[in-house]
Image: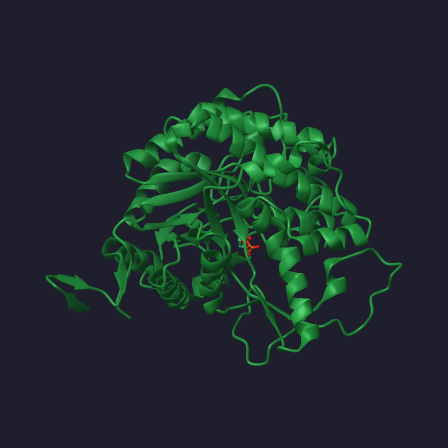
Length: 471
Ligand code: BGP
């Protein structure tokens, strides 16, 4: 600690009003009861259809049960020092058929959650869509069908009307590229297609839907608040500076980052991406007025989810032109020797990536207001680290701390970064990995539903109270 005038300044001191918190999503935490009126989402459907796709056969019905425990959970969230908390609304809980009738039980539930957060001085950040398409809309083609865009606009407006008087930070989508990759390219989300044309259409409709929600939000001037989108950015690093590697890396950046980042923040698609989709005959069907809609309705704020970088090298083998088109036609992934790994998840740990993203936003995206909306480390069998009734997750403290140091540096260099949210608050159900990897500041015993704050939870409490740390 250094003395700056009379005030003691920590080595990694963050601004007074920095957002400290963590993120969750409806499907992963809420749980479902028989009488709650929720409609089915694609996850409920997919689990019923193919339970063996899920780790140990555990589906989204078995969660940390926030639907019943939110009051106690929010007390714990306060105890670990959060001033902000991200949750998503379940579209199929609020509007069971995707359009039409609103489920009053859902309205009461979300109202209670929001009130409870506010009563505990925790600002709710609400995300409208976290991978959980209502099944009724998936049956008409989901994001492939333009009607889903209209349904989403209606859902967003309903949510703003219902909760907008209390909530001023809103997000249209979490990681919109994940349903595109998972559902339409690489077969890890429902509807398990491998179809690049559909993938491009889905991505495009998602961006149009986001712009529609932003337009409505601004017209309504919801709580004089801000609306953004949350993107998982994977900075792309070439194996070498030779032109072929650089070109491959730029292509990966176009597909996996700029495909959503550019239209969301700058209001236009990158030329390079437009050329590629034209070349392969997979350009989306558009409507008159879309271009202006996207241009005029960019985000106020950007959430950045950062887990891992992407290492890229030039393509070594020419792809089979008769096979289905995949972005991988343009690059090969590259395993960097000596890389640091989170072996449980198979993801590289590269802390400086978070800094590179923030500086890129500063230099190339108008220094848009941003915050780290997810960053975290999933670890298997954490109970082996249990000592004196507490999980000693020093590895997680280390992980968060090292990333925060880079966030601090970016901020010191002028990046407009306003906060840090970890993934996640309490251990929760993960898409197809169920409970394999635990991510929370708070551990959850799924059998007993008992919660215990981990060592990292105590650590983040101190960091948030002091707005920083020394070493
Ligand atoms: C992000 C998602 C989260 C969460 C997290 C951890 O991509 O937004 O919902 O799941 O990744 O990943 P996983 O649960 O797959 O290990």
